[in-house]
Length: 447
Image (cartoon, rainbow, N blue to C red):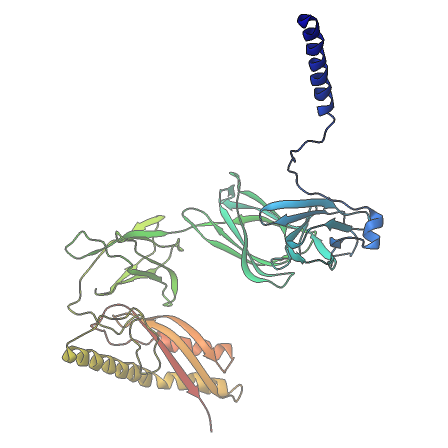
């Protein structure tokens, strides 16, 4: 009798288990599959602005026509939502409270410039309505870099003077040519660019005032490069193999203007930027060492090695590498070591005062030439004012790197005349090391 009841019981249990399994597939799962929230609203919802989130419109900045752009909503580095504009250029996306970045994309269109790339919004219980977002047809720059009519590999830096958003003086992009010298820059903003071109052992090239118009292509054609001169070497202590770190290396042309400069590495090595093949003077200075000045005549080769052994000074002087007022020398920008010996400090101060007097004496001796420049100016126009020059002097007394710091007189011929006079200054040699930068104002008046 017991066996008879066991079999039906087993069958009943199996039926119950089968029933549970069949119904389990129809029950909601307790697991939630994570997904990116993406919401695109209908045209009717957009028009009624029945949105708790952000809405707006994208148009062509040049003709104000709507654009079917793609909208991407970011929160940090995570994409929260994506959608497309409708035929009227409108879009709307529902969002939770928070801060978001709105990115607008359209093939062959760019934002207005550096300061008009993406938009940031904050949702805080209220819908956000954006002003019209303008995209502009991309500008394109193309060309070919050549040497002796053969394409070469080069690097190009595109630097905006000013873009259509008003942003000024920034590096927009850096690209390289292909092996045949061809390059194309697309996705550029409208505005005015400079292009700097560099290639190994070649003289750098700069193209200025390249005007970019939205939707237009600028073909620069073939851009010729020239062979240049690379000056390199090692600066060491005299009688030692120890390199001098952070020594200043200047290349100065015959008009005494700096054309290239660098500083030595920890081992004393240096490489100047590529310069034109011409006559130059190489000036090397370092704290605690006698300065070196070497005439470099025009080279037929592309690389020139210039090694220097510098002699140590007995004492480190303080009158160097600094801006001065007339008859005043400000001490080195690197604070000198403290001197406990008062007599040594008095000696240094005395030498600085003496050198100030020497500067004044040189200026006075050349006062007649300055006056001649001014008399020539008065024959054209009666003006008065002050001109402030900055120029540098080496320990040998040479003057170079002459610049106008400020001027109240704008006549170009007059300013060139003054510059020529200063270029002929020659100060007495100094016992100190390094370079001195002098700032000197000249006042001009008439009765």
